[in-house]
Amino acid sequence: MQRKQSRNIKRRKWVLVIFLLSLLLGTFWPLKLKESSVKLKPIKNDNFSVNNVAMLSTNVVPKGALAKDADNQLKQAHYIGTALIVHNNKIILQKGYGYADAKTKRVNDAKTLFQIASVQKGLTATLVMKEIEAGKLSFDTKLSQFYPNVANSDRITISDLITMTSGLSQHIQPVTFESEADNIDFSADHAVVIGEPGVGYGWSYQAVNYRLLAGILMKVTHKTYTELFEQMFDRHYHLNAVQYDMFKTSANRAIGYDDSYDKPYSDDNVAYHRETGTGNVAMTTGNLYRYYYLMINKKLIDSPAQLWRTKLGESYAAGMYHFPKYMTAHGILPGYEPTVILSKNGQNAVVLLSNQYYKSHSFQPLAKKIFTQMTAIPVK
Image (cartoon, rainbow, N blue to C red; front, side):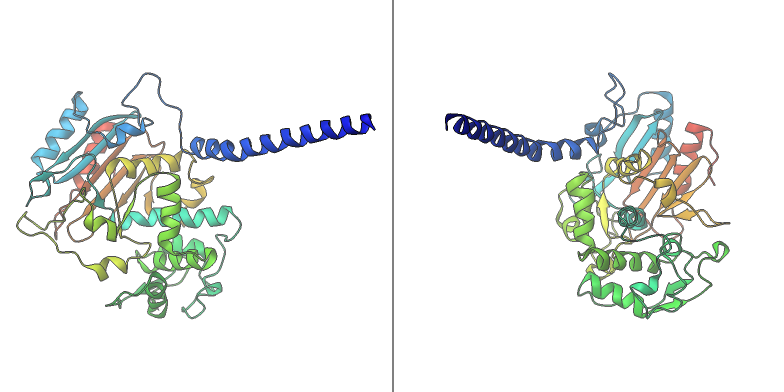
């Protein structure tokens, strides 16, 4: 009897130990995984390393010859916005130029939020790749599985949408906004054929490709695009990409201007809301660069090279133009022009987020010039 009681006591002790261990693992292990998923090995004793996340939200004054030269060129071009320049994995300049809000005399700086316009397509493609890696989609999945009413949908693949070789366009835009799903249904109903799907040489830059990708994401996950976006980029990776409604009221927002501070663009709710998955979020220069650096280092997805694979004869895939030694991303919205140029390893970069854009005026050539001078890599 005493032996039996002794065995029962020992058994209860082991059950208690196992229970406590499971609680500890359940409490701390996921946090450790989450933390390690976004950390990169920093350069030792280097506060200006791009791996020092705090530096990506800090103004960095130009000190070396390269940085001072770039600073002078930005000033001479009357650049309005924030610039981030990375050279050999070090931030050599992060600085605001001009006003974020001329009315209140608030200047641009490292914490200023800018609309990233079409650059957002890259983040949408990243969400799609997460579903591909989870086995819920493939590059060969047909559009007809989700939007059978779209012309040629039985021939158009996820890959065609990512590379904009679907042969689709959308000429009619909605004049009201009810929901993200309704917005994408409108795009599906008004998609028209302008070319043959899947042919690289038939490429055409058409936003409808990425609106349909956003719709596919929602159908696969049963979540809104905004929920998916915020869950991954904001709550998990802390990139603080701000949706349009939050951007409008943010103390750090940059007002978009035409050719002078006397011509600010007014907020247009419908115009921005209808850009589901294609251009209605804002970011800082540092967090936008951080996104690309995490992508290159396989922290957001396992296979960025697969996502960035282009069709024969073309250079566009997943929100970027890909070349042998560098990658670029660019966007345009009324009053905003984001430009990103990165070396393939992400250790050299020029990120210009401007809150001024008007017809026939672009800071993109300046970004290309600065990058080429810094790296000796010619940029088209």
